[in-house]
Image (cartoon, rainbow, N blue to C red; front, side, top):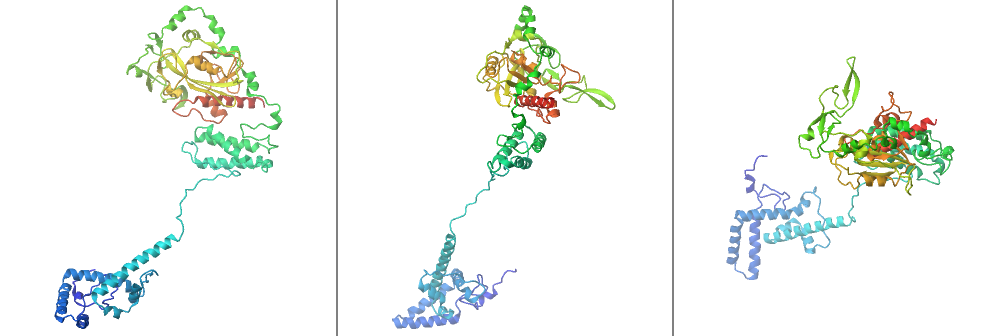
Length: 569
């Protein structure tokens, strides 16, 4: 809009003194007719009181002079506009009337209800005072009314965050977990399918045990999550569990319950044997142990009186050895400099045969380079001893005791992690579990000599901080659970026996089981990762952080159970 030129300010507002406009373009000064009436009435009143007219005329003249002051005019217009807001409902019917409190002063309400002509007949100062009083009282009354309306609505509502509810008789609801390797939607779908199978299986028991299906569903899904390390493994194991549950008949009683790893068919419960009893026929023979280079008492007795071996074994630092990685000869040192930590250039992967462009080629699994290429990794020179006499001369072998302790186990699965030291390879971690996959030992071990390389790529160990055992104390801890009659189970367990410096004749090696042989025969063998993928549909050792010794031990038990199940068909 264009700015006002002020021409209408010379004209008196037609709604004066009850103008409903907030900003009015007309003049709100007292009209001459009103001023004359005001002066005449005031003259008569003062004459009756005995006051001289000259004093009154002087007061009137002063009032005119003040009203001509621009600041006074502006203040008067603001007060008039504020006072007339409360009466705008009478002029403008579209505006709602404000509520008036019953506790407001009676004189104020009466003045508000007076007609416009009665208000106009009063002096300007009195009119302004009454209007301001009315406006302030109405505002206070309005605020009080609004506050009362809010306070009468009751206490304030408090918002609550939604929580996932679980039903004891329905499928469990999986809670979000950032550490889970399986998505929440996949886990919840798996839970629903497992629950449907358990509802069918436990149909005869629902009345007496309404929560049994929900409890076993939760345990079954937790077992799947615990035994897998990635989403692909979770899916495959969940599918296997669902297939097993689908083939399972309805329960015949409270004794015929359990998740897949616990349930035993009722017809076979009476003839059920422990895993050690069923696996006893597959213990390695002495011939197999010698062929697979297991340490035995017979081999150690052959060169027991060889003094040259003992003298050579005593010299570790300063001796010349062949590097186990790059096959170069070097001098063993216990303190390495910066250059010596990267002097060895090697391939850490194995050789494999591939066909490229119609030709067969040998390449490394670590980098894909062909045979004879420069290494793809760097590190210090390391070595390991292959001779039992040399190993025995450095750290003597011991035999498992004959006595049984209170915590004796008939079968124990082992897995050891080794590191390179100045004396070759030594034990730095031992994990032992029983036939039910219960953890018995999982401890770091201080080696007997200076560490050169922790072999983190395979051992998964980055530091030995927190280790509280040496080789002697960890063997005593192991002897609490095993004796000469205990079956020790593992994959390629001869390396673990050498690291433990342990002589034991009751061993089952998954490498030697007839269902998992290598086409070239012993000592060639398949890796544990390949066997787990092929026969258990399970992915292990698929991280760059090294092997999990508990996972490897548990996989050996599962391979043995799968072998016995297929062999006894």
